[in-house]
Image 1 (tube, rainbow, N blue to C red):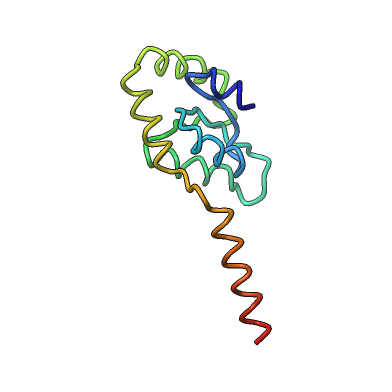
Image 2: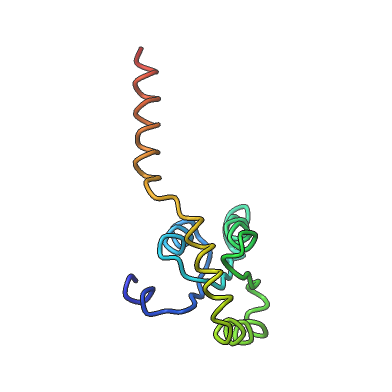
Length: 114
């Protein structure tokens, strides 16, 4: 996937947590199509967070056939918007989150042993 992401100017993807994390770390503008078949509609919430930050566009699953290609064309023709979205996507990245999570877990474990 790293090569595919590197080659892309715009990424079209679902909005699962790992995909969102990857997109933030690579800093590319995205069109997100949240899966309607997931628990508690969490992909829409993930996508909305990026859309609210100006890093992504959301297209509902049932609207893909009519909206996806026009949206790709709109973004492809607007380099300024793509650069803004890419910058905003990068701003959402949380580098070191795994280490911080592990540190907090270990702290909780140690505090319970006492």
